[in-house]
Image (cartoon, rainbow, N blue to C red; front, side, top):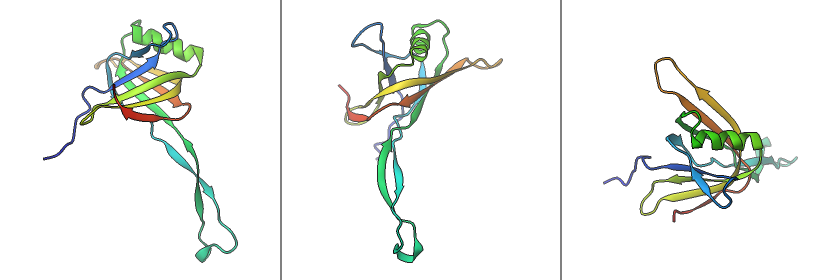
Length: 144
């Protein structure tokens, strides 16, 4: 039997500067993934590299960007928090919670709100896509 799980119950949280020490869960999120960190390639090729083949060593980790897709509820607490964070342009603590067995997994990281795109199609629900630039190291741990 498979141990696979669906994403139901995943969450995205962002620090609310108006309330110190509080991470606010964004409402009506329907798609989120933890940061996809990538290690930079540093070329280490030299005159005697075997078979004239480029050689590489690992460089720094680029923590990347993430997107958070949600139903758009204009003027809601979630909408207000995102707009305030985007306008502030400051680094905030963020967290993605992913359902897992035996314990949910939390991915915490500093991030900057880079973009907030709202879509209002004529024959479908209104949605918004939040783009976050991960601004530092990502920590993965069992959720509390």
